[in-house]
Length: 345
Image 1 (cartoon, one colour):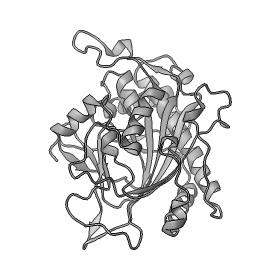
Image 2: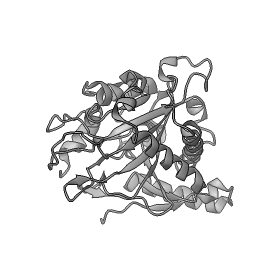
Image 3: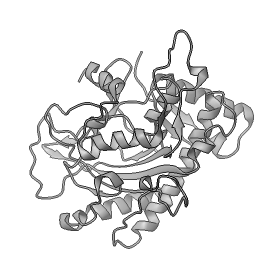
């Protein structure tokens, strides 16, 4: 089967379309989730000026002097603030040791949902406060995009509910205080950073996303690769005006891998011996910290035995973050690591 990332117009859900149109969208999403796990979505309703504001904010932050960016580093377990180049290794979150033992060279800045957004949550450690850089307009522009991405993520969960034949609102009680993170990434190293430009250089190591669904804005510079069912890594770039949607581990658990959490990575966009700037912003919708993820009964039968024990979202996310941000290999990611090792690298 030829690899391609399906394009789906989710407008009937965004605009409140007819039932027949929504059913068609749900069927298209089901097929895309079964076959690829990555989707180009159009009709998402995110205004162009909001995306422009986001890109301007990303550029303004990553253009700051290195010393100033480093002042925004936060403890690894908080998943907030600045991550410097080579401070993380995403492959460890998938249970895979980097072949070169070189951490990923991207830099990132994270903001997310906080205790003030969800007063009274039972596990406040998963809702750390944000640190906002002292840049004019940065917080407003980033927040405006995060609000839109959150809306799109909610729409996708609504579509997933219909696609899986679940009762309306099935996921509401597990997502009404969702752990959410907007991670802004930059793949151009700061001036003066010394690193060899060789075949082993990794922009972002192979990994699956941790939660329910990811809403990804990315520019069209090369680098993003998705592992297909054929075991081959395929280049993926967003179409004009599209957002990329991919499934996280928790949806794979709920569906017993009827829908797969897609392995992906970023290779450095190197042109004439230098790394081109590549920017992206991933909004992770992960669910409530205390919610327990248990395989949906409809996804288990004699031909599809249950692959997963129940787990709280907090436990799952903590093991993933310990891999990527602390450097502790995730031994629970046996199925993800097996897929990576079987891939044609």
